[in-house]
Image (cartoon, helix red, strand yellow):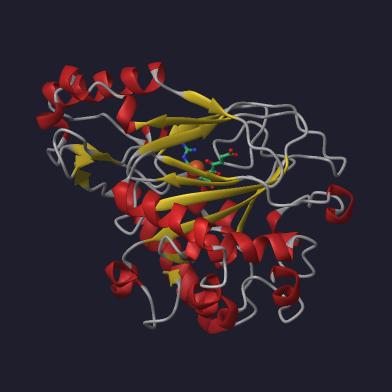
Length: 326
Ligand SMILES: NC(=[NH2+])NCCC[C@H](N)C(=O)O
Ligand SMILES: O=C(O)CCC(=O)C(=O)O
Ligand SMILES: [Fe+2]
């Protein structure tokens, strides 16, 4: 089915394909749809894995040197479609104007020159654990990763909120709007920008970069936890947090949470064909360091952001069916 579908599209970014995704997903096997629906509704785990998708590495060809080189003629288009359909059963996929040139399907791969930068395309330096897009009020409910290659078993790290002993923490303090979360580096023009080839889009993107940059100067105070006090949702990216001026109680509560998260972090090694859905409210994640090769055989993942409430970002999008947040 996905091989047939792939013949009709040039790129996964085709708005017609993205718009049809949930309708097309109705043709996926019922046990798969059931699995994703239970994962979404019951929250049995912060991690849902669909394994067994066929990947022929010889057919994939070399890992691109940059996400910029991957959008057209993708050798993995059938797999990308499968991943899109599965993700669309959890919610609506979306992208950021300020990340990977406003694409919806991201690449996670090591980029030459980024080895020691704090960004997903680094390698020799670990990627410190975080909530995906923690700084943004429109952050996704899920961040999904599909593995195409991982020859040296670089580990993704995940901490499930279910493994945190909330009774030992000052949960009430973490529900208070006392915490400053700054934008992460992947939304900086240096990393995320590319020419759209359309002056109107380029102008909108420039405004979006400027808005996000302005949050560095005037950080908003927000809670780290939300939802149920016994089994809370969390949003934090400590690398991009500034503890300056926080009340002593808030700081203590935050440090206690970070210690627990670090103690409960687990390695998950993605294998080619694994589609991993991370609950971005119930887990934080990161990645261990590895040595990149830059010879075409490097680790290569695809990434999707998924929201259960696309209307929540309507003020940030030019049209109801536009999936890019500006
Ligand atoms: N601590 C961090 N580095 N947070 C940001 C995470 C990486 C970011 N999502 C990226 O695409 O690169
Ligand atoms: O590479 C991984 O396994 C995770 C990447 C990630 O968390 C990110 O790019 O934000
Ligand atoms: Fe991430």
